[in-house]
Image (cartoon, rainbow, N blue to C red):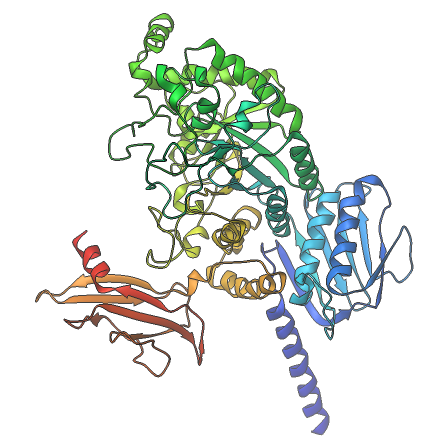
Length: 634
């Protein structure tokens, strides 16, 4: 009887340890297959790493050496052969078709860890997974004492769903330094995102040195510094100094490209034309079809478009002249220099939100329409895009643009990035064009993450759970033309890299899982449990992220007697909401929300905070009652 009891005890203990191991694993993006076992492997003080020693392995070996030396203080020794190596990195002699170019196998046993892949990229991603199996302190920028550096015993098979797993950073609205861009690339690479879309030009700044046209950076890279709500700034006075901004030299570009390559990240450069081109026009007014363009200046954030009218007419001419020979000479030289700097096979040339009202006033454009038998101004832009496509292809690159390039007729070989929902991507794919899905509805990271009373004001909200619903292959599309997906961070309201981090994470966690992990394995509640553990990792790394997911969702209403009501909900389960109408700051000893609230007749604000058990987890949110009333009216 005692033996049976002991056997039952050990079985129960084994199950408990196995369950604890499984619960402790929080890998983002979710691997294809994880098999957990009992036990763990404790890393020795000196880490012997067995790996091939060849130039292509340098980024992988640098990653493992830098990561362990920074936070653990362990000595890392690389050897081509070593009995009892703590970590073995193995390149397959014969390609394994299951894992492909970027996949890997990771096997952690009680005596060591083996990562096997077909390529160096696969080993790199296997290491990123290994780091997520280690304690969160592995992310510390300094040595941490008193941590047991152990990995659970586990077998992982993993490979990506899509080849294009992207993040876009707009450095035109606000300039980010070379070092800041590198840090952004570092963070995306940790989560197996492999495409950095660099939005380098816009109305507010031209950020890349073009030796053929030096005024693009001496003039076009600088504007007047203003702070506040971008888009509604007062008109700029003539005497205000234009010294806010910056640009990347061609040497800077080469350095960032190499930095990204060492993290198995490709860089897609974007020069946004023919619209969004005020920085270029201010530098070289002859690019414009408007005679008064020589009076234009780089935008600082004042109003530039009338979004209330059809076709969103421009208030100043921020478009290139599609009828001007100089325009195409300019683009030929610009794309030629860019092609030499970026080895990636694609070049993005914008094409979005091109106002046509100044073209309509141009005799040169009218003459072009008559000469080329163009019936609409969308066909004028199509004429421009097709000429530009030939220029880009002459530089050995594939032409890509936003989904507006479909209007008026798409060029023969153009690739489309679909941002205005998924419709453009479906249309392009069904026409036989390559597509990258990047719809506002799921992956626009400039959108507010919480209620507008808590966030810099943008015209829409995109919560974490909505981003997690993203699927780059919607119904009705020819899937073989979908290269993948990406999220975009436009930076009108993003003034610094800390806010860029805040806007990117945790929604980029969701993106990573949407473009890497099998669609069948996606589960938001499971995913968010992992996100919270990665919040702790970001705390260690001192990377900023948004806690907006904990903020309540407010839904106002009106009773038949005209009383104002408000419903509260949480995006994640298991949270309690406490509230006050008396202007004080609620805690868990205040009333707990259990159902629709009737707003007291004289209340001026509703304050709420979320708790998990006895611990506050959300931010204190103050909702003006007038704001709720306005929402009901709308």
